[in-house]
Image (cartoon, rainbow, N blue to C red; front, side, top):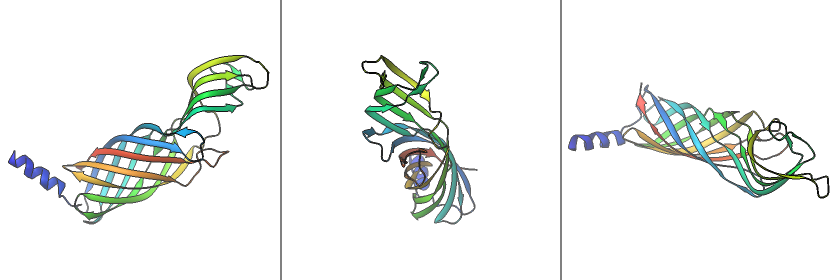
Length: 219
């Protein structure tokens, strides 16, 4: 027990080693939403990936990673028109929707960050993050109705559908955050400040806060 405690203390106090390359598989939770989205709620989701770090000095490191990130936004009791669905319902325009909608706009993110260690185990970080669309879907749970026809037909809907157009395939963000390392486990919290729009015809942008845990080991 004494030996195990000594190893844990030494791991917690380990300083960044110059020239060392480490890998850190990571999993965690996203709290995602979108700006300028009325009646919207956060979409919780997972984030997972791997990050490598190179020790430039005892106080400074550079990281690069690849992460799958569930993003988007939820809408409660929303209404919008011009529905175009041709997979299951064969609806080709002239219909509107009312109900709950979830935009599933997952991304493959590649954060490249600088890390500053003001004290042993603690890192402050900031960098750049290009991202590429991995999923463009919307889940609809509500009612379709013919908006242009008075007393027209209605039909229930509860399924996910591909978004054919309107979502940008590339986005760019500035990630900032901090992390703490204990016994090779790294607890990380970061916020992604998006500089690019998420949609082609709207000024709405992603807003994503992530909390993760990773296991760090040297190569």
